Image (cartoon, rainbow, N blue to C red; front, side):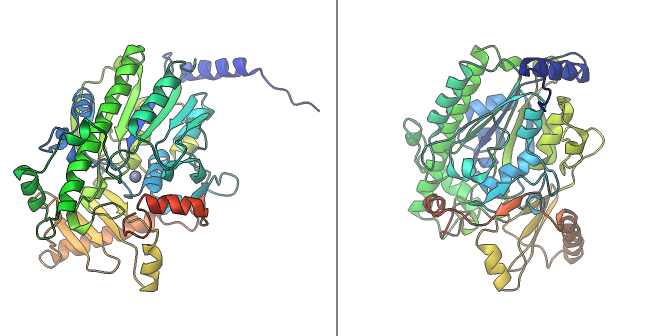
Length: 456
Ligand SMILES: [Zn+2]
């Protein structure tokens, strides 16, 4: 027997009629999500950096909601993106390293869906433009996107990604859209194009900056080069985001869009003996977060100094924009609305990437590394070395361990951290994660520095 189906156009219209009813008559908001891989918050002018690395983003932040303390859940690309798009912690999603493939588990398990799936089901047109291997189609993160654009090889510069997005915007979908744009420029290898490459060179201010962050005896020419080139990459990607925002304005779309700009994680750049990421030091965990709401909501620009986890981004958007996301999806959010007037996040949980180290930790009979980040204190549960306690008001750069000076506080935070870990550790993870990675993908990840270098 033939199944009865509504013509697609009627179905789309019905969905929008329903949406309009839900949102008090206004059209559903189109949403842009910009994730800038490896963009460390404190390397942007608006987050206090001494160099003018991010004029476009700074202006965007000043004109919108600017969150001063946003923390990722894991300083690794795929896990952080899955966490952001599900409002779940890596302990829950099961995605704790790059190079793995996630499979939807709706039939057999938790039913967790990614943001793009929720919006696609709600009638949105969904499109993604990604710039590098860790979030390409082979990972399964393309699920729920009508259009998924990725580079042919392991990565592409921001200019090419912006060009691809602008081409798509030349013929925008007739219905509300969700657009995810992923830039990769600040990630290694640091190779900014001119004119951005030559903007920054070593000066006394950089030497002081690194000294204050504990990069002293080990400060090599390589570390200095890395810092200058990284800043050039940030300036370069800032230019690309500016180009994208300008086009949205030219097209008359900008005013009524919701636009989020954030990052999956930061970068070591020599601090704590690390160049890359995958660890849980603050320079790797703190990310920029700026949200533009539709002008019609009349929300004044402001600086928001509360603590935010990237798991909070989805609940914030869903609540504030009154998105047509089913209650069963909302109930699975582990984050909270970062604009909630009554409730504020006190701590944010972060976890170290587990690609090789999980095996190493198991062999040594030790634990994975976790951190509980607060605006006042941060506690780090170590895998092999000693636990750490840092005063976030005086030691954001984590140079003075106070575990022995503040034993009671340390014990209390340790208990809280263990409780958080227990809270998010279930018998079954959200996604079935396939461990085997194709050899060619492993090669590409190696070339990006994910394997064998100690950075993940
Ligand atoms: Zn990344």
